[in-house]
Length: 198
Image (cartoon, rainbow, N blue to C red; front, top):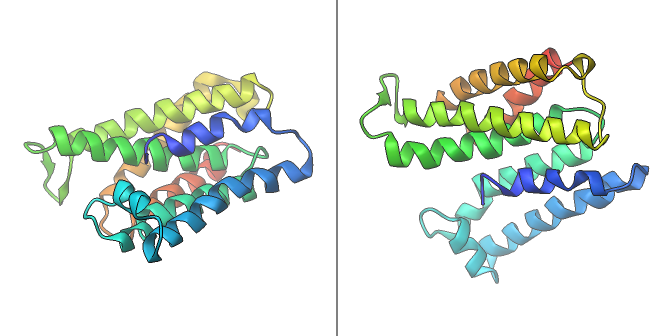
């Protein structure tokens, strides 16, 4: 769910019109998901809470998963198809952080970082690869469909190298045990995108 839901939603942004109301209409999707998570935490959606919880605690729906949909809501309502900032922020959070967790749990036992014992080198490598691949693919898709104009004159090699740098720095941010990486990683990706992709 973590790795694919945000990128799959953005994959369909080109089907929305270029009318100003399209941004608000598209924002309904993450907004409804936020409401569903609150409902899952406090009441009726036990199956949803179980599906997104690692511990089985319903209140976990208001942690990382809730932050995830809030970041998706912010990217949709604030960035939309005006800039790559939202695309890169969500791709980095979803694909990068999601694959770091999956690969780190399976292959990270013997290669923990000495300064961050809960994180692994395998997970960090997966973060950079998945984040870069997803961000570059969505960037190319948005450019190909004409959904948004690409910075750097549309030079995909220059864009890919800067996106890889953003992904690498964000993988480092994920290692820092300050706050939930469902907001620290996309915030870092958004700030770096504003600096490096404009």
